[in-house]
Image 1: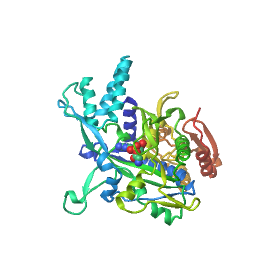
Image 2: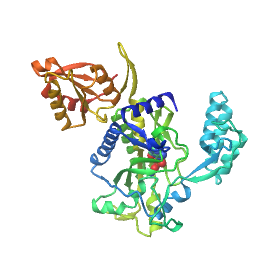
Image 3: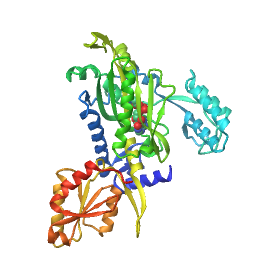
Image 4: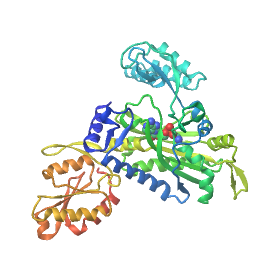
Length: 479
Ligand code: GAP
């Protein structure tokens, strides 16, 4: 892990954002629990997505489909036959690797050593291998020819490459058997496709329209060593936008821009975002692009926007025998709508926001770590401190806290020096700290300290709620 990621992981545990799952039993790999601050951050991001996708579009409605679905759903979607990772084992260390990632690591090393021509040749071979009929054999051949060694043990002692399905299996009923095998959904999208007619008819929607969903997805990821970047249980925020065939590119371009803007509106620095266009999209897509973020582990996908044609609805029509067509009253024709999908990981968005917000700053007398979240996603919007625990200051501070809590999550702290209390709130990413002091007792004013600029202003205590509300609404990143 990168040093910065280590620091973020440690802050997350120290302040109660994210913990390893089942920690007291030694932890469970690639599964994480959100603590008091983390759960607030997650709720705020979920809310921001729902607001931007559902409430701001009169033609997008939400669903909450079940995680367990009829097994034929996954046959129809292609996940049973093709949702695989090519894996290879190092016999020396018994560690397992994704064969394509191993080769990508080798290419990066060649580039670092200035062996550009060789790197490019291996890159081309990898692209061909990824489209080969026998993917495992093609990847194995590259590993052998390039004599790629295991990153951990340094050994060159590999098993064959074999395909491994990423879906978690479970069984319906008391007995385990192949005839009652079902899967934990590996994406939320299929819950939307199978409800296409239910939602369209009940919400009386006409093409173009969208269905949005936020929910858990499960993938038995093999390489999962990057905190909440790649998890086995995670949440997705997906929206399928159903359009008339032939108009999908217009919708695709529109959603690309809207989705990038959403990340910026949540405070992400635009220079940390870039596009990755898929030159060869999957066989069922006619265009695909990823929004990439510069994570502490490098540039990685945070969201995918995919023009998926009529593939999914077409397959569900074929496997279920139920018509997935739409009668378009404007042209008086039936067709299976095309779909533009936007798919973003909620946890991966959280890691992006944590990474983007993390700052180490040298103040006059000390260093501070501050999480510079956009106030609208910050877990706590305002904290209230009595300067001392006497002279009626705690009572006034509690009254202000109570007022704030009617509108958003607020916090009261009277323990330790004011400096320590500020440091705690800086690490929690609380944008505004209100202090009740001697002057408050005289003239009813309090100080409000801005997390980022450290500026302090004095305002009447009755105006605190409106002040914080205005600031949360109008906030602009510093600089
Ligand atoms: N329905 C399309 C779909 O699921 P995907 O690219 O496989 O597409 C979409 O996943 C998003 O879900 C990714 O961009 C990422 O943000 C998130 N995601 C995928 N696998 C994940 C994992 N193992 N852990 C955390 N987030 C993941």
